[in-house]
Structures are given as structure tokens and as C-alpha cells.
Length: 486
Image (cartoon, rainbow, N blue to C red; front, side, top):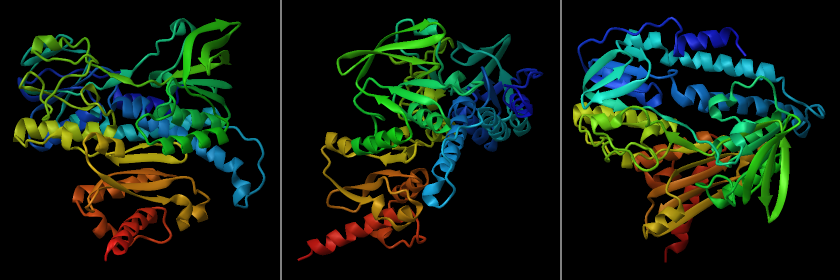
């Protein structure tokens, strides 16, 4: 599917007529990878007056722009728009009955959004900032230089921000049958009538719900006993009920034994609850995580070491085994989130050139799964605190008790704020709500400012607002102090 927006998008992220510049002597910083980590690093480095070169193998913007956060959230929004039409009578709108998406229009909208956002990371913009942009495959020649094509780029410091790629599924014959990952899922031409999603992580759940809203018959196959393994069990249970309401069939504790193609149909053979079954679908999305793009760069030539899972090994300051080479983002971090990639890219520059001594272990990053309701978290879970022997007190407000959630008809969910027992220090929070992605940012500010629950209880919120649940949790903490007083 190619339209004007797509042409403009490609012109920005990988101009077809681009000519790599001639290397300009010794660079202060050479960046390998033009995703969120590399782009944030390049921008900061140029603001410090450094001579910067950036090498991108594929398209600028990384997974986030090209095949992750941006296109997926565009489809989530389209799915919700269709669902709102179907559900309109509940709020006094007309009875709509069945409704399905105009998938071509959905994809045109997604392409236009992606193209617009690509302006901020375009090759021309980077060049205007003074960054030398090279497209091609990067290989380390030695400890202080990188080759791209026939050009050798010598550096004082280098930053590897090569990102990650989707993992495949270890399913016999799946390659022959054919499947999609986030790398090509967003280039589909038509809405699949039947879609199988292998994997119950954030992207898998988001796309399962979005495509169910748009009219696909969706089945999730997950080998674990719940969705979203990192999140709280009751959050996953709320999501499971929400998925069921929009028609998604879920198969947890499922072992896939193989895939085959018969008369044009894709068949997945699996076992669930001890019973062998077969699922016939039109498309298969594999969403089982991502692996670091650390291969084929000749890292050994620069003395850079990787872990067993492929991630580049770094110390707490993002430095590799080569003291002149740093790494940031998905290629080295356990948590593969855009906000973490951007923060670590800037942190690496500050550590390399300003001796800032910033530790990536100190990053407290909020995250969110953009299903309906959204599931957001920051900091510790109670299980994390238990592993450290830290006593915890949790304050919970159910969204069904929040006035704005009631008026919105969005009462599924909760706000849980975890405190270090015996203090008002917030160590973590989980939010399940229709606006959790926005609400969790308030907790992030509170935690970074070290305000605590006492200060939070006195902060006025707009009324009515779903975020008032956060204030109510703080008020519950203050009430517990009064009840505990002699």
C-alpha cells in the first residue's frame, strides 16, 4: 500500500536519493543506530558542540516509529473508534448493530500519522543540526573506528544504539506456512477475517483487541497461565474479561505443536487443557518479544562483549568492555521501551563527555499496555519488594468508586500505590483504567520529586477526573494515620 504519505515518510526516514557524506576526520561521537536512543544522543551531542556521525542500517526512527509504538497506537485508536460506534447506544446514541472498519482508510490514516511524526527525525533535519548521516551496515574495524560501506569513521567515543528485532516462534513448519511480526504486520493490505496471535505480551494483546474491534475473529495462543507476565494478576484478569467482551478467544497454558497449510488455510495445531485442537486462520501474528540487534557488527574487533541473550554487556554507566564505546536502548537494556531508550541515549552522552556518573539502574520508567482498559505501572511490584525483604503497604482505589469513571461508564480497573511500610515513600504503582497511560505520569512526577503520600494528599485535582483516584489513595493513607493514632 503506497500513497502520498508513504512517499513522504520514506523520503524522511530513508531518502531514496541520499548520498552518504565524506567522513570529516575524527568524530567526537559516532552513533550506530537511528532509533530513539541514537536520535536523542545525537541531538544532545550536537547541543554540546560535538562533531557527530550517525549510521542507520534501515530507516530512521527505529522500531518505535516504523513498526512499534506509533503504528500500533494508530490502529488501537481506529479500533476504539469502531467500538465506540457499536457501543454508542449505551450512552444514548443510535443503535448501530454490526460494524466493521474500512481497513484501507485505517491504514491510510496510520501511514499519514507515521509520516507526520517522521518529520522530527528526518535525515534532512539531522543534517541541518550538523549530524553526518550515513545509511548502510556498520561494522567495527577496530577499537576506535567503524566502517560503513567503503567509508571509515574514526571516533573519540562511540555509542551503539542498534535496537532490537522481533523474535520468531519455535513452532515446527511455521516458517513454511508464513507469519507476521511487528516488522511487517503494519504493511498488511486487508483486514484478516481470522487472526491468530501467538504471545500474550503488550503488543499481542493490543493488536488482538484492536483487530477484534475492527471486525476480525481473533484468537490469542499463550503458553503461560496469564497475559502480561510482568503485570499484577488482577490487572491481567481485568484485561482477559475485556478481551472476551470484544470477542477475542483466549487460549492460555497452550502448547503449539506445529503449523501447516491446507487448501489455502493456515492451520495451527496446539494442545490446551490436555486436549489436542486445530485452529484455522488467515493470518498469524507472532509477538513473543524482541532480541538485541548485536550481530554482524564485528563487535569483537572493538573488544565489545555480549551476553548469552545477545544484549551488549554494559556497566551501570552504559559503558561496554571498550572504555570508548557505550551502548543504549534496546540493544543493551532489559526493558525495551521508547522512553528508556531515549533516556539512556542521553545518559550515555553525558557520561561519556561530561563524566556525569549517571546510572541506568536509577531510571524509574513508567510503562503502559494500551488495551482497553489501559494497564500502566511504575517502580516496584510487591513481589519485587518481597525479594528485597522490604515490607510494603498498598493503598487501593477501585475505579468504580471514582466519580469521573462512573460518568464515563469506564469503571473497570483500579489504582494501587505501594509504600515502603512505616513511611509515606511511594516505591511503585499500578493503574488499570481507560486513561492509565496519562495517570501514571502523575505518579512518576511524584516519585521523582520524592514528595510522598502526605504531600500528594494535599494536592488539588480537577473534579471530576479519573486521576482523582490517585488523590483518593493518598487520602486513604492519611485516614489510616488518623485511625492508628492513640
